[in-house]
Amino acid sequence: MLRTISLSKSLTSTLTKMGPRAMSTSTILPQVQDVPSSKLGGRYTVTLIPGDGIGQETASAVKTIFKAANVPVDWEQFDVSGYTSADDKTFKQSVESLRRNKVGLKGILYTPVSSLGHSSFNVTIRKDLDMYASLVLCKNIPGYPTRHEGVDFAIIRENTEGEYSGLEHQSYPGVVESLKVITRTKSERIARFAFDFALRNNRKKVTCIHKANIMKLADGLFLNTCRELVSKPQQFDVMVMPNLYGNIVSNVGAGLVGGPGIVPGCNIGREYAMFEPGCRHVGKDIQGRNTANPSAMILSSVMMLRHLGLDDHANKIANAVSKTIMGGAVKTPDMGGSSTTTDFTFAVISNL
Figure 1 (tube, rainbow, N blue to C red):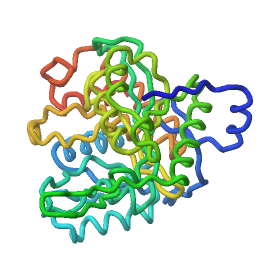
Figure 2: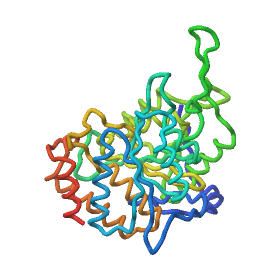
Figure 3: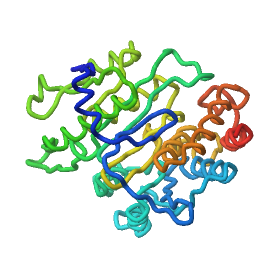
C-alpha cells in the first residue's frame, strides 16, 4: 500500500526548524545533532571497515583516490569479517573506534544464514550506535543507460526495529514465532527525518510504504509497491518505510539504475554516521578478481566528505567519477565493459 503526501507550505514552515547537514554529491541530510568528529591538526580520523567479499578491493580504491586527491582523512582500519565468531575482538575494536571517531566508512559484512551463526554484524553496529536512519540514493547516472530514464528517488529506511529486532522463539516443535517490534517513538522519528530530508532537498512528495490494511497496528505495503516501482519508478521521490521493506526496495532500486555497484548510502543517528554502499551485497562471487565496480563505495565516501564539511574534496571526487563513467572508455563488467577495479580507480584519479 502506498500513501503519498505532498509537501505544503504550512508543513514546510513547521519542519524547516530543524538544522541541515550536507551529505552526498548534491544531497542535504537532516542534522539530528551537532556531532563533533575526530579532528586533529586539520585532519579527520575515520573508522574504515572494508567488509567481506569485494570490500578490500573497493576500500583500496577509495584510499588510493583519497591519497591522490590529498584528502585530509586518516584511517583507522579494521578488517572485520562476518565469517568470524560473535565475540571477535576485531569487531569489538571497530565499534569502539566508531564511538571515538563518530564517523565511519564500511563495506558490507557477511551475515551467517545458519541458526548456529552469530547475529548480523551490520545490524549490530547500526542498533548499538542507534544509527536509526538508512538513506539510499537511486538515480540514473549520465553515461550509463538503463531501461528506465529519469529515475531519481531516495529510500529512507528505519534501521533499528521491525523484523530486524531478532526476537524469535519456537513456541511448539516445528512452529517458530518471529516478533516484529514497532514503536510510536521510532516511527515518528523516521517520519520526521524523511520529511526534513525532502524539504531540504527540494523534493516534492514523500511516499510511505506500509501494509496497514492487514497489519493494522504495526504497519502497511508490499507487493503493489514493487510492481509500481519497476513499472514507473519516476513517480517516486522520497520513500520512507520500515526495516525489512527498505531492504527489499533498496535492492529493487539498485536494479533500476544499473546495479549495486553504483548506489551509495549511509546510516545516521544522533551521534554517529556510517557510510556504506546502499545495496548490501558482499559480492563474494567476484571476490579477488579485480572486476568489482568501486563506484558505490567511492560515492559513499563522497557523502562522508560532505558530512565532514569537506565539500571541495567531495565535489572533486564526485566530478571525477562522473567524468569517468560519461567518458565510456573505462567500464567494469557490470557496466558492460572489461575494465578492472584498478583501471577504474586510476581513471578517476586521472580525472581529478
